[in-house]
Image 1 (cartoon, rainbow, N blue to C red):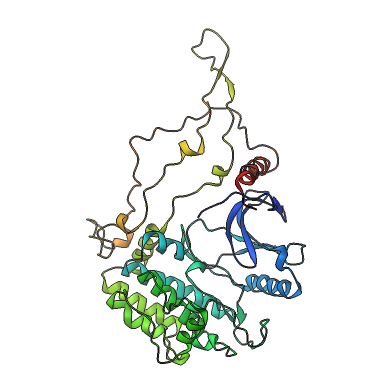
Image 2: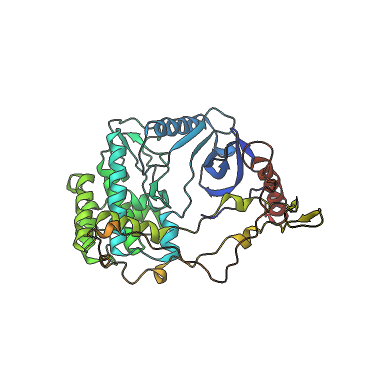
Length: 418
């Protein structure tokens, strides 16, 4: 995930969270990488001052209340929030990784096996949301984060309780992402049913497999017409043949013709097993394929200073001091991994793994050891017993983070266009 420096106009702290950089933005808000006093990373979403009004606050408060009711392994958890603050904010679990939109744009569509695994995982996660009486209503590739522990769903700003026909939206106004929106939502029908998220998931999987969405148009009015026209079929070009029946059903014009989420999971399992894999194997391959190089939060902090430590008296004729080598910088200690695009995909990505001798279940085979760069020298470390410096003060790296943030703002201000 790209982290940009803070601008001179950005806050440096919200609700006790140190803000370290920008990780995203939208029409109504900005998202920062933050850190709690105890060192817990978080995605801190803040409403822009220019759009803070009573309706925005009400909608933001609704999002906070909804996030309080949602649980599940596929949902980015709410950590804290204050919708009544001068600048309303909320903090959620930070997921290190690209969203699906950026991953496909950078590395190309996912192979069939991995798309199917993504479908099973997200369908199960959405089913958990629906069991809690909620609908997402704005599922799209940008709202699926590909984290190190599998994909997670974010942004429940438009979520509503399934049985509710009440909306904060003005009459005759439709809010959402038209390219992933089912016809009934585009037509403003209420109440909506869980089938809206099934359609959106179908659009997400179509994008994952082909790199495009069901309908595309330069004009938003033309796009809405395509979505709501029952004679206009979604574009399934580029989709592997085995996925066409499932995605075609999920993108059906009529809500009653779409499969339920548990049926989506069942069909995804069948497609995975037809390729000779177990679901857990496919899931591990998906995570391995989409995992981004870890960007340690320490990379946002200045390198530790050199330390002076006493030499060991054992075997030394003269007592004295020596300066230990300085800690390596971020660039020196971080190994840049090769791209994770299609060119890095193992040749057997869509083929079952051979069984390990003596192992009856391939899923139980131990994972391969990570590659080691032979030309990568180990980072010099302080001598045993050396006192740690550079991260003292309040718990976590907050003091140093503040210094670094100030330096980043100064550098950013020098070249900023505003």
